[in-house]
Length: 136
Image 1 (cartoon, rainbow, N blue to C red):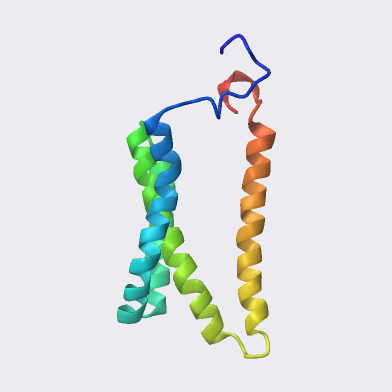
Image 2 (tube, one colour; image 1 turned 30 degrees about the vertical axis):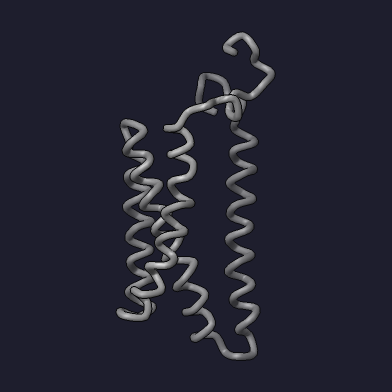
């Protein structure tokens, strides 16, 4: 596979560790969104949003300084918890704080922003996949 430089090896890997790395964010986000509902009900939207933000910071920092795959997976789990809390608490906050006239627009803008962020991330991945020197 090293000699074939035309085909991307990204989808050819059959590794449980790579699968764990990829799915850890999504699984953590799924389970934390259920937990976030109880936390929001018990402690309020502000505490839930702050907890999500703290997890974003911790997960990003851990991913940035990771020296092995296990640190990366733990960072992704923290990011997943943050995504779960943010996706549960922020639309609720926006719905309650927005004037009724603009409520739908606020929530649609939140979802549009998430979609644009995913699009930009995929475009960056696509644009940098063939960077020379192993940096792609």
